[in-house]
Length: 160
Image (cartoon, rainbow, N blue to C red; front, side, top):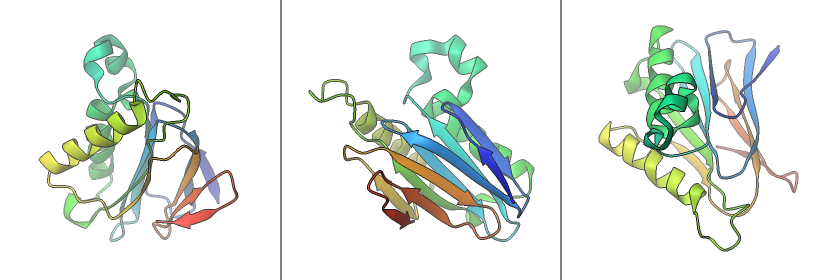
C-alpha cells in the first residue's frame, strides 16, 4: 500500500487501488477529495487561496494553490484516467479560521464560499463536508474504497 502525500498547493490523482492520498495540516486551506467508484479513480487537492487573480504568474506555475485553477485541474486530471463527473463522489474538509483570531481576512470562509460557487456553476454536489471552525485537519482518500477520513487534533476520526 502506497501513501502519496499531497502538499500545500498540490494535487495528486490515482487509479491504483494500492494508493492512499493524504494531506496534512489543513488550516484555512481546503482539501477536495473526488472519487469515481466505477473505475476506482480518485484525486485530492489541497488549495490555499480562493482566487488566482491576485497572483496570475503563481497560478500558472502552481495551479493547485488556488480554487479557481486547482479545481478544474483536479477534475480534468481524473477524467484523463477514465472518471466521469456524473459518477464522482465529492468530499471537502478544511476552511478553518486558525491564524485569523480577529476574523479580519476570513481566508477559510472565503475558500469555502469560492469552492461552493465553482461547484454550483458546474452542477457539482458535495457528498460529505467537514469545514470551518478553528481546528486543523488531516485528510486521506483510500483509492480502493473511496473512503475519506478526516483526522482532527483531538484524535477524532471522521469518515465523510
